[in-house]
Image 1: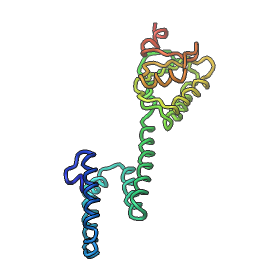
Image 2 (image 1 turned 90 degrees about the vertical axis):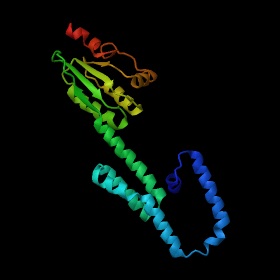
Image 3 (image 1 turned 120 degrees about the vertical axis):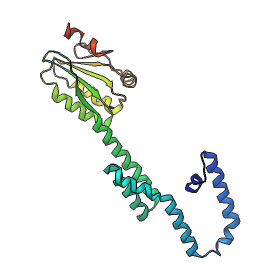
Image 4 (image 1 turned 135 degrees about the vertical axis):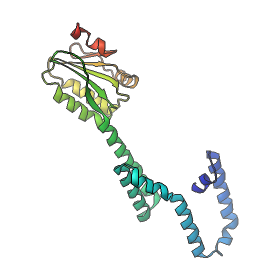
Length: 223
């Protein structure tokens, strides 16, 4: 694959043609390979490995990449040497996915909204995707903020994704709402709105209501 790319390949067809040529070359030239000294083959393999390594990119990553990415890269390199490339790539993909989810989870947060409302009203903006790795922590944080509040308004305009884990955390949060506390959701994006609709989530009078925007959610409080 590396030789194919270096030769200027740009499409899947080139990879197929390259594979066919390699097979034909092996079938035709295999008897001649026995005449090549192993030292020459070793030198050839070292040159191929060095060209594939792209050492300048490794140095650049070590200098500028986040610490998590450096750890993943060094771990993959070590596993390649100790075991094989299949294990290294598999572990690297899993570890990189976990680290990516952790970063996204840290981005999901509650932000205050600057609006003049009564003391028993809380207005917050939810920022970031509500997926399984982030939703539980966010709603736990929200639960600690709503004590003594009569109305909680959540603006969801910055929530692009709501998955099954986030939906479950949201439903459990609604069930745990204190008596006399109403949750108002506004500015729902299409994907979270569709997810809630498929789950059959409906307004609950005096407990859960939905509004197209924050202005309408606060209309009866600011009039």
